[in-house]
Image (cartoon, rainbow, N blue to C red; front, side):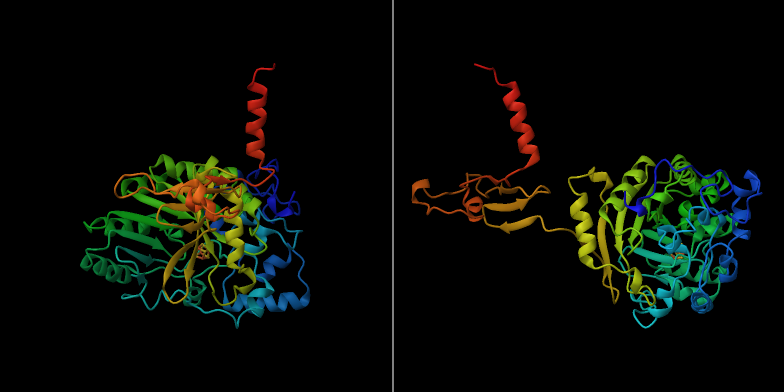
Length: 439
Ligand code: SF4
């Protein structure tokens, strides 16, 4: 088994960090405290010094990590820390949470705002790029600061939330733009705000008649699932339709606590979509993504996007080649349920937006036929409809030159080319042979 895949049979959190073989500093915490998100927030790991007691760092590493921490926050909830195998330097959960030297050495590569969100921002905190949607950044605070975050640039602004005055400016802009029907409330992590402040935002948006749906971008189900409590769920249900977009990146994040949090959201009428970020050393393997997505489906969470990691300053060590994403999509299609297959997208630099990428399934196109290939490598001729409804014109068979190539599919001479050794065809043959009467 790939060591990064994790083990389905691993014991679940016992409420006080039971997954961690090394041991956490909160062994004596009560279950009640552990399950209280306020306790989790007030006991976050926020300094390299407090990490040093849990994991070995050489003096050189410590010095570099301190420098990274001067630039970018460090914040790990006890819950998320309990998912980390602290004795494994390549642990995929740790790589998302614990600062790495790559952040420091990669500082010259990438940009602070490669997606030009600020340039499409008519009002501070609001990005209006696509015609009928806009994005509101309502806080800079996150309970866990992901090392691969696209909006690391806002961390420098401190951990504050937008004031009512700032939110008011955003509401006024949305009010003036009747074409906006979908608002994405993001951050930072909006679900780390006090419940009353979340209500203030949702109420403000619901007063605008043309806002049809609200989406909330949050990693809380992954890093602080206890925040999804009854009070929050009834609030979200009151201001629906609300959709949650979250970010599970690895199957080991889909814990019982996370599943229950997603279930509470669903019961409150809030669908949960997942937007995985493709990250080198964390999930850049088809089997990790397949397993993550099938676990998400079991939790009734829809695998929505697989994002290419953005070209943000200091994230170069996380970036994969685009071909890695295509390879993963190739390995998923046909091999797992379509529901478990996200759309692989790259958000192109300069504000060009999301572009979906996928393996090429169209080999050729003609007036009468399109040549497609399936996941098994079978090449098929797909008959196109004719405007006049008559069958496709075809020269007499004997007048066709003899060929042994894909063009035979274009002329309709053959319907499919099947690679030798195709397992599905062999199965069919065996079934036919066993069904045919013996003589
Ligand atoms: S939760 Fe979202 S906004 Fe916060 S650090 Fe992670 S990716 Fe960035």
